[in-house]
Image (cartoon, rainbow, N blue to C red; front, side):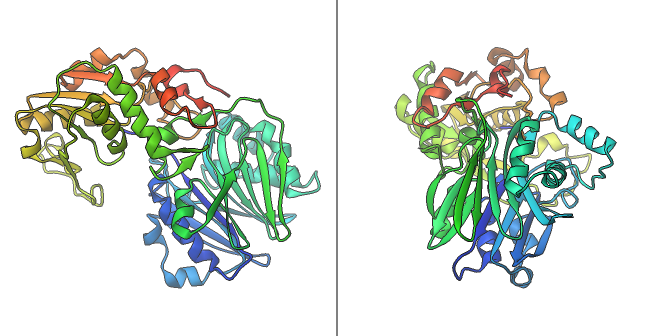
Amino acid sequence: MDKVKDRCGLFGIYNNDDFNTSHMIYYGLFSLQHRGVEAAGICVNDEGKFAYKRDSGMVTNVFDKISLDNIKGHSGIGHVLRYPGTDAVLNAQPIVLRYTQGHMAVAINGGLSNEEELRRDLEFKGAVFQTLEIAELISVLISRARNKVGTIEEAIADIMPMLKGGYAMLVMTPRKIIGVRDPLGIRPLTLGKKKNSWFLSSETCAFDELGVKPVRDVKPGEILVIHKEGLSSIETARDHKTALCAFEYIYHSRPDSVLCGQEVYQARFNMGKELAKTSKCHLDCVTWVPDSGLAAAEGYAKQFKAPLVDAFIKNRYFGRALINPEKEVGAEDINMKLSVIKSQVSGKRMAVVDDSMIRGTTARILVDSLKKAGAEEVHLRICSPLVKYACHYGSGEPEAETPFLVEKNAEALCREIGADSLEFLTKEGLLKACKPADCDFCTACFDGNYPV
């Protein structure tokens, strides 16, 4: 279905061993590619000399062995960008800044609800911005605070009360790498170790593929400093509550990642089971929308005691430089992303399970495709609540595009989509499915209760 699209991935290393720093970051970002395909960047620190490359495209398109070998050093940070509608080249990260105290590189995953206010204030004070990224905005705030306080981590602590939103951030200086999470822990960031080297990543899946042992999540509100002597930490003032973005479990994170002690796959499996408990219809089979709907569909099928069938073929090259269709072939008649396996659906009453729905335009195409392939009934099952409100913390649709859903309900959407029935997981069911996680959740896009 239509997805919440904006998220980014972070990966960093403080290398105390003989690892190839740029290559390790490259492979870490490759493991996080699902978090962003618009742009990628790596900045490496060689005893105070920063070398970096960033460009539009996927990790494998931006970097090759020659470019990686040209950026050597003992520490580094990397970033993958997913932010449709902006200039990916201009807004690629990490942002690298030279200021009165030296060099600094910043990469961020998240968003600020008061970004425009902060930007206007800094511009009024003489700041000139080259990008639209909040990483540059925060870089300027840190550099100005750094001129007033003793250390870089103290400068970060000084500006954090100004940052209203959800973010995870990596900051690199000539002697340190610093991982930061917002006071509510809306965006994820985790610490790992291999031999004597330290790693930071948006998800543990990147650690698993590099043989890095996960140590712990960076705490909400924590400023975790990695330097030659080891680790130090500043825990800034914060509420006792937490608010991890629920979409990390629903869609953003890879199924094999672990967040707050809960495996993402198991959470999605539980979401499917919870939805099936309240679902009322007669089914011959259950299928899923590739790929993120699979775990939830497995849980749904098990609870419903219906066979799980593979009904769709996904074109892995969808979206890569397709020409616009001629007027004789309307875009609405072309579905290059998913094709139906007719033998799996013909004459069947089926539930189609997916993780989320934003506008329902893709759902309409899928229902139509299944019925044209001979499906007798198509029942849509969405393993998250209906998204009704804009996200201001870096993982939602633009505010102007979401309010039309506020007045919608499952019945109205079902009629528009053409399905035989449509059911969403309740917020209570979502929270129950994720209950093993050692955190609370931000559900503002479902209920309008913004934690910041």
